[in-house]
Length: 414
Image 1 (tube, helix red, strand yellow):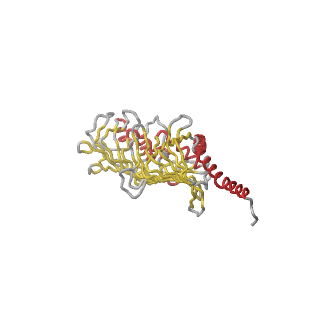
Image 2 (cartoon, one colour):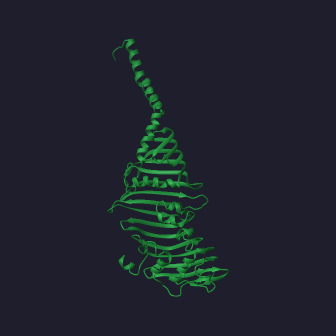
Image 3 (cartoon, one colour):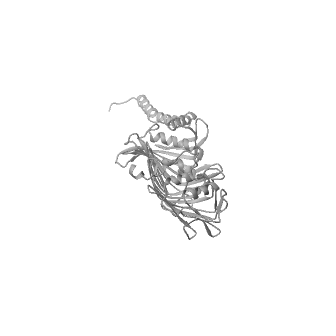
């Protein structure tokens, strides 16, 4: 060691102190201050907005650990209308890595939301965000997304539906990309949550979507199911579904199968809004088996239970004329509506036609009863052509829907 002058030693110590102590402290302090400046929050809002295609506002954000960011007061709004689509009290984002089903390790982000809320009328806009993600038009598909929430409230006017223990995510598969969601309903004691899944299959041309839902023992609002299957919106606002649906889209229409129960079906929504043809009442519909292929029903079997209710005069006449439902001699004058206490029937529709069996109040063959006696009974001649069902339910002025139901040669053409 060569000797150093005392002044030189002091200069070296001062330089080491400045470089190893003061400068890192200033850098960390400056970095911490910058993270809390308004422009940093605004930059984060702009970055997320570009990813989602929505306006994003954040009340505050802070980085608690490396790779962990906590946002408070998060709101998503439609950039065109300004309508609020979703909000949550707090959102935690954690960057990590996950191993997929094929054994590959991918970057991932885990989002944990607290007290999330959204509105039914804004769901289509959120669905558009999901569609763009599944079609790889937004975000980074190679990044796995996992979502959890303690509670999610779906609001519609003054009414709301609460979902609990939400878990979901978006990630790549061997044949495409999928989004899945699992949740529980308040007051339902079951070990099985409701599960939903949307898959974008890229191994077919053109790429196609599939949709699965399994409610387990729970029943979910049909208005929630209508976000993916718009056809069920015709069942009424208060209707609910319990069962299983598996569908996939083709260029010629949807294919798949369904089994389950629809509760609280508004018959007025299913029939035409004409005072003479309308049916008043709510029904429970059990579908034991439904198979459809390329937008056409191949086979359907189930049961309808309803009552009390009212059959419009024209609807009653159509059932008697076309489906050969046998009326009681004591029925009111033709053209008048018919009130009933209970209506119940089993039905089967396939390529052989339609069959109807009365299942009402332990009266053999009774389709509808009033005052303890049968007022409508099942047809004597069965099966009957599906065309008669179409004529009974669809006015002549309406567009034909025969393409939706099976015909005698449907089994051969499929």
